[in-house]
Image 1 (spheres, rainbow, N blue to C red):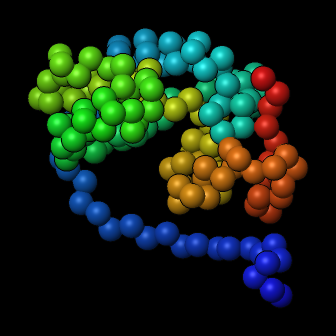
Image 2 (image 1 turned 180 degrees about the vertical axis):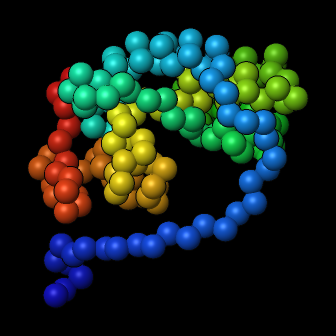
Length: 163
């Protein structure tokens, strides 16, 4: 087989990093409120496939992005603010009130899904061979831009819901 032919890639991902200490995960009122706002802003559609909760059969989920909640205590917040203000983290993070942000309470940014969130269906959040938590980012994001009907995995054919 030539490399130019469609071929299966199997990866065993082993990660060895030291996560910072952090409080047990809680669902904050800010997270709940901003998730609702995120759902409204994004038209209730998954960032990757465009499916709604009704079509996917599961409630849509908010993924912390670009800063994962469990990593908040290792972040250089001055750098994040600089990147965000410059637009490097997208238009929504740029609108966050960085002047009032206190790095001692990073969850005012981290749990605000309107500035640090991606709306995802269950499959594209935590699904095997589909979810952002379970595969390398280049493979995950390719699902958003793949052509309709492409056989992405042995069990997933790419479908983008009409908006």
